[in-house]
Length: 293
Ligand code: NAD
Image (cartoon, rainbow, N blue to C red; front, side, top):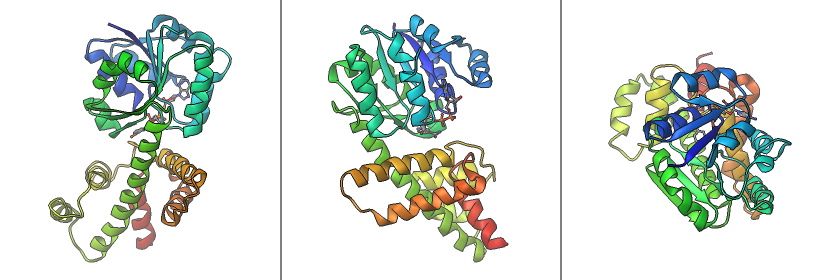
């Protein structure tokens, strides 16, 4: 069985790596944040002292990182994956990054014949914990075949979207644009219920059997709005990042998407007001607090 190295043990990476261990894989982890490394260790994982040490111990290397900048650092900086990996390994980035970065990484890694897939995921922390993530993969078929068993462990729904490296990311960005819309819609619509004294639990039960239902409504309401706890989850700043990438794809394809643009402005504005590290569902609380003032 392949040995797996997992870089980035955050909200997603930690449960994904634990799921792989629980399914019988030997997993070695690395995170720049010591607290996250300790959490992994407490769950029975081995910790590498550096990404170079991790690579030396692994057949397949997965990354789950928060930004383009972090992915560039882990892959391309001196002492990073590009310097240490070899053609017998497979590297998989599950982070959501700009499609251009997928292309840049593939170009750099292929110069050293290092097989690479860009495989962003959807389903959130709960999906990662339950190993039911959707995995949207771009990259060579041959590489996909080598690691599809591993991808099937982290996600119940694995789609090889195409050989073009950024194909999976494009699908993921469409998904997150929809998430941005649904989150905004739920956040505003629930304010009407509050004003008209309609109990939010009752509303949820009724919407759940109506066309107003959505998985994002369920997630945002049950996990964050009802308990009034906006600890992420999916940080608002990460959603803002993904909407920016989606808008870049639209711009690069001469697409004008005015409603999506105003949505991006909304999330940017909230991040400027200090809500970036809270779950995206905090938009509901922000609107409620503004109305109640
Ligand atoms: P996170 O911020 O919780 O975790 C990222 C981890 O990477 C952190 O623990 C951080 O310390 C670590 N890290 C940063 N730079 C590093 C480096 N140079 N070397 C090693 N570790 C480093 O983010 P997350 O919510 O887990 O999201 C990770 C990725 O998955 C993002 O690209 C996000 O867009 C995507 N995603 C998140 C969700 C979600 O619900 N949270 C869902 C789907 C996809």
